[in-house]
Image (tube, rainbow, N blue to C red; front, top):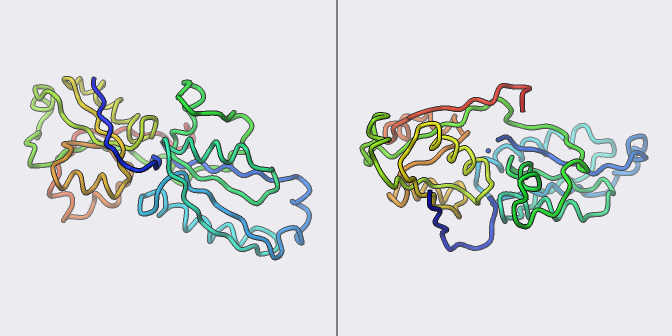
Length: 238
């Protein structure tokens, strides 16, 4: 398999969103600790993608339950499948004023020894995920004519769009190509979610994966695509 990289500004790169919260024990019992303070949620990615759509409602939810009614702001930090944001969080003072939100790519980063992953995942406090159990779907442009498994396997060099190497969209894309036994697929990486949608529409890539299933249910979108396979991460098994 070959991997081609689009030349785009540094950015980031849904298997689910993991939130990391540095919180000092003493703050739990001190409502006054957060009064008049600001909590920053660092989203490991760019604006406009499914990650932003999930983390914004989460910010409103957290504000209701954190003592002291702190102000919560959302900041974006693009780069390397969320690894840049994870590195940033790892270096911060553990004062309870920063929450991290990133794609599942931050988890295998240090385990697989991906370049630039300079954090220990065991030293983060993992709060949870906003998309455990969501399926990943592999689909292609209808204009590509890949409307059967046989045609998928006969085609050589299918261009599969993804975010950065290590992002869950990239990892699941690789998995689909192995399971479906595709012939010499080419991965084109370096997209944000909105850019990847545009690339599909402009025939810059032939196929991709996503966990943003609700969008695919729209008739105006679904009628332009061929759906090939799904991977389900059972709830509670991540």
